[in-house]
Each structure stands twice: as structure tokens, then as C-alpha cells.
Length: 424
Image (tube, rainbow, N blue to C red; front, side):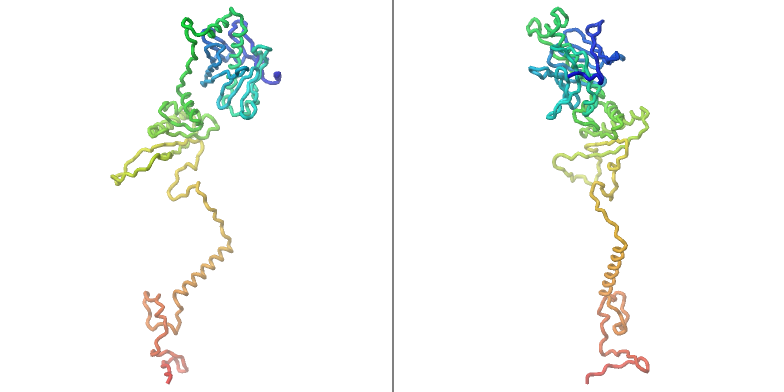
């Protein structure tokens, strides 16, 4: 596959003054990377920034022909294992973040099983040898995937390719050269005189904020910070404040690993605020505290002794949400208020016609109930003696008067009393 002249290209040019130095520059002559190999019993290759002379990556191995090499990136620190996975073919693989990559002589691919791989780097090699003269990083393919540190990925791809050059020089160099002597010493069989083959140098132990970031990455947590024994309060606070430097990070969660770490969570939260205030950041962080959110393990025990005394018990777990924006769903609710998570039945407002019909029906029911409870009082059923208030609800007092009581009758000469005629 030929290189596209329209894409950004790095040209590999060995230095005329030092054979162990190689510059990677663009067609205009601007040097972007500088590779330097250190001669010795072990294989050591380093890539620098030519302008600031800052170390970008170091590659170590027992020898240049080893099937496994260790890449140590700086600022920020990261470790990548480069391994040969081809038995009869040239194939080297490495992992970066959550993706797996593979070099196949002139091409570097991002593997997507079961989908086909995607080409991310391309070189042009002479026939029969691995001696790159130019290389292209296909950014338009890398941008299709979720890669956080793209600059770090570019450095790893270039470092892996340059180690292939050193390995190729060992196989094709003359016998009296220094590289050939290093190859013969590293590939010599183990004997009591020569001694054992040297092992890979140990990986450097991370400290400070890098160690906190590594611990959270092992838990697959990105905006959550679990406070444990390892790490100081200052390191946790620096890590939390660094998370807020990203504009897309609106909130983080600081939680305890066990009950012993509850006070440490509060100290980490205060340290995070102190660092932001010291840096001159005026944006206030909203704080929401939740405690005892983790379910208890085992049966619950109720102690009936000394129930009258109210003793304070510290929370078993603590979770603190720090947010750049207000989060009403985490606001504590007063007693008697409804939970917004519970479904609320929507009540539709009734029309005026329905309201009038409901009020009319209610008046009829009230009137009917009153008529059933107290019968109407008229002249014929009115009692002779005014009932007391307690007797008003007694219907018996409204019965007709006995027949021997004279009834009032209206006549020509006015009202008069008469007795009813007897049947005889």
C-alpha cells in the first residue's frame, strides 16, 4: 500500500553525527521526535521532544531481539507491554486504554472482534528488510473510536516501530559491530561461566496522584472516587480537583470503602474545596451527603437493653456528591412531602358544567337526608308541649294527639273546641 502524499507524514532520518540518534521530521524539515538508543548489556531506547528535550517514552528489554518489551511513558506515566504474537509471521500486539492494536510489518491495526480491523498507521518498507523511511498516523481513523490520550497512542505506535528497526539492525549488521556483539551476548545459552540471562527490569511503582488514578481505573470508576487505606488525603483531593478541570465533568462522587474510611471521605471533600479555592476558582461546588446507603449484611439485631438512652452511632458508609450544578433530586426532603421518583396520578380539572352538576347532586342528597331524619311539623302534628332540644330527634313526639284531647276547629264564631262525636 502506497502512502498518501496529502496526509501528515514523518520521515525517519538517522543522524550523521551519532549513529544511535534518529530524527522524525515532516517534509518541511521540522523535527517532531528524536530517538536515541543507549548501548549496553540491556536494550534501552528512548524518544525525546527535540524542542524541550523532555523524555516521552523509554523502551527496555533484555535485548533488542527479545519477544517482549516494556514501554514506559512519562507525563503522565503509563506502562505498555509490547509482545510478539506471530509464530511464522511478523505480528506484535499491545493494548492502549480499552483497545487492542497489532503491528503487521508495514501496517498497524486497531482490532475489533468480530468486526474487521481498522488501519491506524502505515509505513513503506524496502523489500526484505524492516527499515522504515516514512510513516503516517491515520488520525481520521483513530478519531472514530473513544481514545482519551491520542498523543500517547501516537508515541506508542512510533516507539514500537523504532524498536523493530533496532531488531532489524541486529540481524543485518556485520559481525564486528557493537550491535552484533550485544546480540551474541544476549542470545548465548545459559552456562555457569556466562551466567543467567538477565530478566526484565521491574516496573516502577507509581505514587501520588498517579497511584490514585490507577486504583480508580482498576475499579472501572471515572467520575467516582472510592477512598481506601492506600493514598493520602492530599493525593485524593488533588485527583478530585483534577477531575473537575474537565469542562464535561459536572459532578463526581466520593464514597467510602468501609466504615473506617468515613472520616477520610469528609477530609478528601474539604481538601478538594481547599485546592480549588487556592487555585482561584470561584465556582462553588454543591455538596449532597448520603449515609448508610449500603445494605447491611446478615440478620438485623435489635438490642432491647437501655432503650431509653439515645446513643449516637457513626454511619457505616458515606457518599458525598460534589456538583458544579444544583441537583434537586439529591436535595433532602422534608417529612410529608412526596417522593419525586414515585408515580403521581395526574388530576384533570373538571369543567364548569360538571362542577355545577356535582354541586346540584350534593344539594339534593343533603336535602333528602334532612327530610328523612326530621319529619315536617304542621298544625295538626305539632306537640302540645314544646320538646326539649334533646327530644327533637325523637319522631314519637310528632305523632297525632290522643282522641280524648279536644281539637281546635275553626268556625263562624271563631275558634272553638269540640269533642268528636261518638259512633253511637
